[in-house]
Image: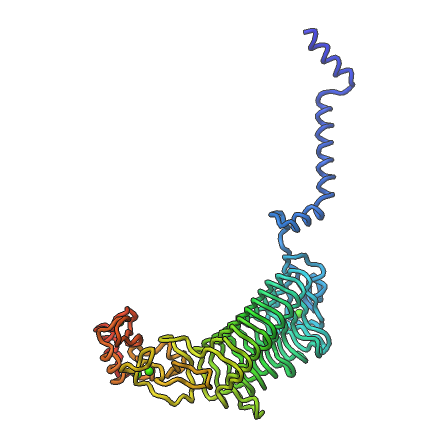
Length: 447
Ligand SMILES: [Ca+2]
Ligand SMILES: [Ca+2]
Ligand SMILES: [Ca+2]
Ligand SMILES: [Ca+2]
């Protein structure tokens, strides 16, 4: 009793009541919190972002319009204001700019045909110097003469250029310089009147896919650039070449492209090895009038490349090979290329083409020169050859007695047997029997 009293007396002697003390303490804490958080946001969030933690701020979208309400009227102002991870949405309009993209932002145009970046004939249209940039939905046009270009990726990685029109730039449309692991897809890359429309210089592991690369001076140049994939593009109606791979451009894959009606060579390759040129349609090239630029495929001083499953039709000259040793087929029964000027017949089958019954591959090699031959030239364009009318064993686009003869010659066989004909195994169950005969019979007479 005495002690409690004394304590109470002591506190009371400080001159502060209990409620008042709590109020004071609470106020101090509140003030501290407010002061601390006011000082924090920018620096604290930024450093968290750099560290890649989960505290990154939500990405912001900036709106750009040349003639309506928006955050900015020019694309460059929006890039300057943005932080990495932001999106810049550009409304339809004409933007007379040379743009530098020096941070990881997404540039999205409202519509590729009327959201236009016009360089007014000077500078590079869009110069991408950061990694992880995405750009889609624009027309990029009217940039300046060399060394400028429509879009340049300079030391950029993991960027994506998709769904744009890159067109009518004075020198070249699109260049990658020392840039790797980028995707260039679904663009119209057209009307570059002077140089190659799309060039990869010292750039690796890029994917160039699904673009229309048409009506340029030249199509695609790969220069000292390796491990790139060029697939499923339409590379047509260029004044001179379709694709160049030159000077130590190794281990690239060129596949599934339509390379047609180029005035010069369809594919030109020099001083390069380890490339796979597979499954391309290479037709009607070399008719532009230059007496030297006339080949579907030209290879010079370039060896150890694999070139098969391509379809070569009606090029002014199909092929020229000088000082080169390359592989022109994928073995048996995968096969070689289709050459529209192949004069051989298909009466035999097997790795040595000495067994009765055709198999869709010519019985004699397509001879290129003393060091180069396609051992298994295809009897029809690869697109059909790989997906024929069921029962068309010899791939001559009709199911008739020749196919019946092939099947009969291989009847009862399995892959180890001497009379095995892989194409006679129509249902791919590793035996030639009544099931294959049934398929052939139900398709008999089809063309
Ligand atoms: Ca507008
Ligand atoms: Ca044959
Ligand atoms: Ca047939
Ligand atoms: Ca079978």
